[in-house]
Length: 257
Image 1 (cartoon, rainbow, N blue to C red):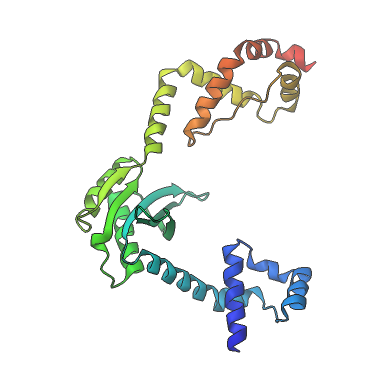
Image 2: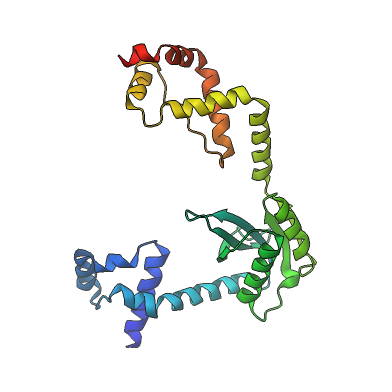
């Protein structure tokens, strides 16, 4: 029984670590392959989920705590919105050491009813207290990394009450994002060209065919507002191909015929 339990625990961990869903165990070819070569009874997916997933979860948290013990720590917090429109906040911790390769661990991911400095501060503090338990860790947290949103700035000030050695810095990438947004604001004409170029070929197979016949290059880039580099790439594309693109747009009906 002990050997079988160890096998199922290791199987559960392997499936989770390699991002293989438990329902793959219901596949007859896969189950037959495992039974033939490992000489073990393969359980139903519900068995792993109910009896072994929590064991693997707690074991992983224990290993992370052991790696963080006796080291200085940095924390990173970010908030996003999922496909349902819910606010999801994530907390990452890592080791601050000049001789240790930087490694980050996601220790908490929770839904927040709303996002402000109070809810984020409470989320961070509660998650750290739950993760470290009775271990004295407050003085070991030296760095807090977040974006530059006003409520995150206020969160950093609130957390310093509990973590006096902590320094709050904002992500450099978000600074670059603000620069890119400013560039877009300064050139509204270019922004209009980029937006219309994106719309012109959206779900328009005849226009795409005309584009490929006229232009000796790939389709115009489709910038994503949350990825600051994509808008700059699109602007550079139109700068390099403006003459041909202008000719195509001016005579699009002729090219479609």
